[in-house]
Length: 375
Figure 1 (cartoon, rainbow, N blue to C red):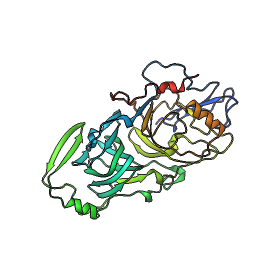
Figure 2: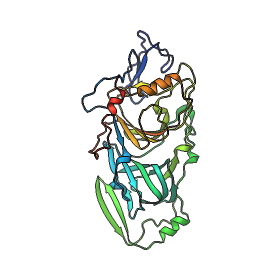
Figure 3: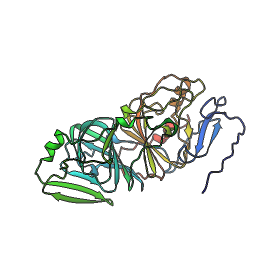
Figure 4: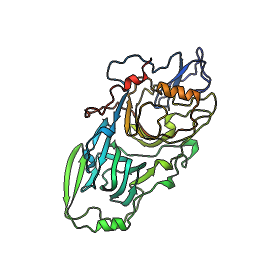
């Protein structure tokens, strides 16, 4: 057995309550372990911790515009890889035609976040429709394909050699954030029956151990007549998420966890009232979170902690340096000019460092690191 050394200390000018009533003309920085669940200290600085004047070296905040990924394919395994480590693989899939083959990921569960577009997903379990803002959770080695109503852009998050589970909600109970009753699953309906009767030859593209296998069938493998159990594809839309809130305290990102996998979590930020207490911080607090890399995918709205970020962009803040709001956002928060957020964003926090593959020219905003530069 082991436990953290913990002994409360207060030195110099410091707030008695994190994220509230900061000492005059100070900037709070949280230094924490285990993604806001471990021991933490709060520093109160004279200057913003992100107020660097120059940055040299690879460990820097980075931003990518997935709208500039020109690859369009109806085969999801050809989607552009943006970030990867041994636990997770993040791809961006732009698709403008129906899938003509079945996909089967033998390397891990998939979460598909529908950024744009709509359509129908057919899988071993039946048929389910989808629209923008839907999460589709697909268990490992499920056969599936999509037919689109309009072109789709999909953030694909693979839990490599792992599974997606629900977060423990503790004292707020299992119905907080979203009631499990809002989850939808595929059904054996008329649409599924119509496609099941196809007698054409079908191909399954199986990705396993990062190698592709092509398996041909003289029939449609999606031919289930029925099923029972508690393992299935399911759907959750961000519009059904009701975030935890406190009018007197800015909650940490961990309060917004949607899915938990081995080595990373997925959080969803949705519109909510901004803290109303005069002494409470109104924007995300500066923090180190030195055990996790932090990724944000911006889906829609006005991203209140960032400047010059558009829908479809991805930011990566590696662990090891302070993260926090852009200067204009911090100033706006101090004025409490806005009373509520209207942003929708997907956050991925990973325990192991993320690698960025070579991306097409123009996808990365190489000047992003300078957006915090002290003027």
